[in-house]
Length: 78
Ligand SMILES: [Zn+2]
Image (cartoon, rainbow, N blue to C red):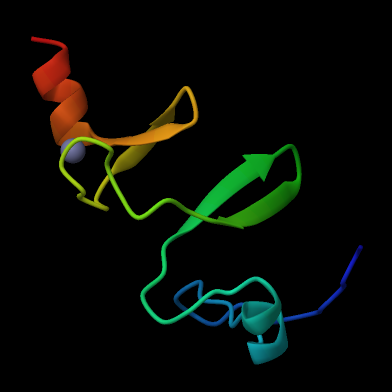
């Protein structure tokens, strides 16, 4: 199903995801989202809570479908 919604980006780059879309995708306050850029599209997906090792949600990178934070990547590469 395709649902189209037009929004404006504010001066600091924020976009509001309307309540009906949040409800439909079960997105709540403080849920994490994943933003993928595919050519000229931005794809927003509900994300796993955080780093698979420490639970942090800062500086996450995706590796084989799992989220890993920058600190844990650094630790693993030692
Ligand atoms: Zn981590």
